[in-house]
Image (cartoon, rainbow, N blue to C red):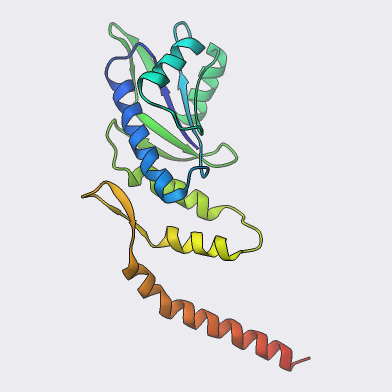
Length: 196
């Protein structure tokens, strides 16, 4: 999961970070798939970030991804969440001064990476999400699962286009390793049968 905290009356950092995150999420979806991770945007200005204001904030920024949730909460909940993910803010004459960050969480809600800045490179978001996807317990490996792993392994970020693309050179480089592993597995099976 990717998490960011915003306040809806912000006119600089929060909107631009959210728009940039939206574009990075779209890039990640192309690589990892539409259901592979969720995004949570939380309003931390509890006096003003009502559910209605959060809906307007999401609508104004085109956050139409069904796996993207934009929410508000009470002050105690926001404080606990901010402490857990290392987010800080202070009131200022302009509203709030705060860290521009996106937090990557694993399935158990543990922080695995912080991505700082309003305009981070998409791999800063996509690569930890990819690692989480690859690290999931998939049970028995199916042909589809194997194909997905190969696609993820052989995807590289192209800064010129701002997208991930399949790199056939990586696949060609992996073929000898796959052949050796296949022969080793075959040898183990044959040796095991011979001992029976």
